[in-house]
Structure formats: structure tokens, C-alpha cells
Image (cartoon, rainbow, N blue to C red; front, side):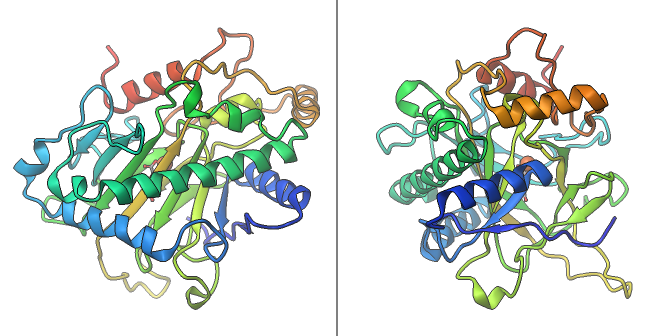
Length: 350
Ligand SMILES: O=C(O)CCC(=O)C(=O)O
Ligand SMILES: [Fe+2]
């Protein structure tokens, strides 16, 4: 473990589009992670709090009630405690968490069975996912700007009008440790890289736990706030690059490995109080048929040439997938990649 990491804080509404594009690209190349300043987003704190409120209500339901909405092969629905194993190589037992996955909406409607406490908030869910889509669109355009390719290169390949994207809104609940918790075996979310293009992560004040694997292979905690909490209406949105953007840019953008741990002892040996953690993740993915071939960018080409020259070894480690690329292989589509990663995570590979 190392000290917590200072990730860049980006204002998406910066009127200097070129400067914002360079800043987003730089963060994506250096860390694969950045914060979006919550003082300048399309979200209000109410938008965010409403979704956390419904998550709290849902996860409090008795297990048999939640089990009626169990995750199916379409990846939608409830995932119970110890069911998903994000890092099967290092953890026998599934992650110490629950989740509820909401698939892509159509015409503002949720296309899966929902319990009453979520169904009655369908309009809030639709509003929130629209805002997530808008935010991802802004980020994808800034990345394209930074890579000096047409601004809509990525955004147009994420357009739901062109086919299913597999975008997913995920409510996450990590209970305070319970009697079944085994410190030697349990982790809240095992080390992994994300599968899609970009992930937006919403966190709550006082509920830390996310760590990222730095380039020197050390775990660095990511604070909920990158500064004084009093300055922000709600915690800045954490954004990370997923495997698909990494494939797409030949590893230039980093799909950084991360995990969620229980609160650590501080340096005086005093443990932080054990608490529940809630988070909301929005996984943004390209349209399923999109081929993940290197983008026509001079910045990417220069990087590829440099990489060949120094014969750089990319890290392919925890959870599988991060930055792995073999462009001579069969051209992977976004849909194929997503299916293979989900199969590995839920142990359905034969
Ligand atoms: O809850 C979190 O902080 C992170 C969750 C995560 O990394 C994931 O679901 O991919
Ligand atoms: Fe993740």
C-alpha cells in the first residue's frame, strides 16, 4: 500500500475545448482515472441523492424479495453476496457485496422486472441514465479532441440509435463486515479492470474504499474528495477508462486495475469505523458490433511506434484484460469482449 493518489480534477464545461481535451487525455494516459468536478456537471445533488436513496431502500429488502429479481443471462438484476468474483485468480470466495444491474432503457422505460421501490422511481432512473449518457458523450468527445481525431469518432460509436450498447447502471452495496466476514478471504470488490469504454462512479461522503494499482504495482487509495469536501455539492464523479478504449488506442489509454477494500487502519493503528459503502457505477459501452481496432490517430500511431522501439511490456495482471492487446489477432467486437469478460467473472467458462 502507498499514500493516496492525487488524480486530476477536470471541469467538463471548460470553454477552452482543446485545453480540456488535452487534460482529459493526459489523465487517461497517465492514470486511466480522473475526477469530474461536481460544481460543473449536468447532475444536481438531488439527482445523485435520489438514486442513492432508492438503492438504500432496495438493498434493505429481505433476501427472498431481492432474489425474485436475480441476475439472469442478460446481466440484468440482483447479484447477491459472494456471487460475483471480480478477481477469481486471487479470491476463492465471491466479492463481499450486493449489486443491482439496470440494463439500457428504451424510450425512457426500464426493460426488465423491477421491485416496487425501483419501479416507482422509473422517471428518476431514466433522468439519471440520460445524464450519465450525456456526461460520457462529453468525455468521449474530449478524448477524441485530445487524440486529434474527429470529435464524434467515439461518441457516434456509442449512439444507441445505431444498435444496443449494453450500457448498464449498477447500484452497489458493500455491507459493513458481518459475522460471515473473513479478513483473510474477503474483499469488497476484487482487483479488476472495467470492461467497457468508460465508467462513471458516484460515491458517498465518508464511504471510501476504492484503490488503484499504480504503475509501480502498489495499491493507492483514491479519496472520495480530491480536496475540501465543503467546496463540492456532492463528491466529484470518478471516471475510469475501461478495456475497450484501451484496446481501441493500442494501450495508450490505460484501463487501470482497481479494487474496493474494507476501511484500513490509519497510521496510528486506529481502524476507521466500519461502515456500509454504497456506490453507483455507470458502465458506458460502444454499440455491440463496433470493432475494437486502433483509432486513426497520429497520437496513437506515435505511441505504437515508440512502444515497438522500446519493446514495452504492458501489464496484463489482476482480473485479466487490462491493456492487453494483440492487434494481429482476430478483430474483437465490443459485444464479444463484453461477453467473454462477463463469462469469466461469473465462472461460466467451461
Ligand atoms: O464500488 C466501487 O467503488 C467500484 C466498483 C467497481 O469497480 C465496479 O463495479 O467495476
Ligand atoms: Fe470497476
